[in-house]
Amino acid sequence: MQRLAGRSAFITGSGAGIGRGIARALAREGASVAIVDVDETRARQTAAEIDAAGAGRALPIACDVADRGAVFDAMQRFVSHTGRLDVLVNNAAYFHYAPLVDMPEAIVQKMIAVGLLGALWSTQAATPPLIAAGGGSIINLSSVAVSFSIRNAAVYTSIKGALDALTRQQAVELAAHGIRVNAIAPGPVETPGAGSVIDAQGWQARRARTPLQRLASVDEVGAAVAYLVSDDAASISGVTLKIDGGITIVGP
Image (cartoon, rainbow, N blue to C red; front, side, top):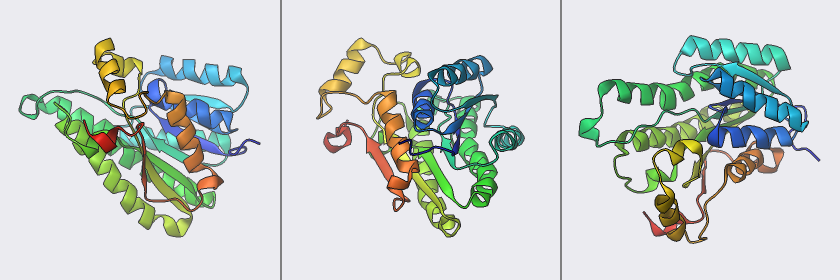
């Protein structure tokens, strides 16, 4: 039985990587999904893959989540297409790693605009249709990086820590409307984006210091999201679920 049949999910940054894995997982559970990505070609490719699989429906939407007006327009387009909204996944992010003292202002502003403000704008846009649907679920993408120091990641970890705080705050504010808000914190996940800054030796080192001696896949992260937004998790709100093979237990 598909746990999300008849429901719809708006997933930012879902043209590739972890977002793509989440979109595929929710579609397999029967959801109609918005593939929201700044790269229109990438969004269309992922949507076509989901449609071809025949589980759920996918609508590609090109959108820069740093642009509040564009986010509201994208949300209106998706809700008009599906007739409802049940799930929001705030996954979009922009990454750059460097010592804090060397971070250019423009890079810092872009990271905050996409990774934090984008989540705020998407939450604002999603709340009215979620309320109209009688409730739903919001998932924010945090990271295990907030649990210990990561070299050259001060801006990144600050944004992810802010998303943890937003998760707790919104879980309380939106509870009266039947909206649950949770976060997931993946450990290292082998994606093309991560592969641009981590080589084979780096991946092996991460596996070696993970208690389970393996790293989560994008599909496993997607499966965790599918659980959290389903009725199976109806009493779970305000938590950050680590998907890390136990790496935060032992530290970096």
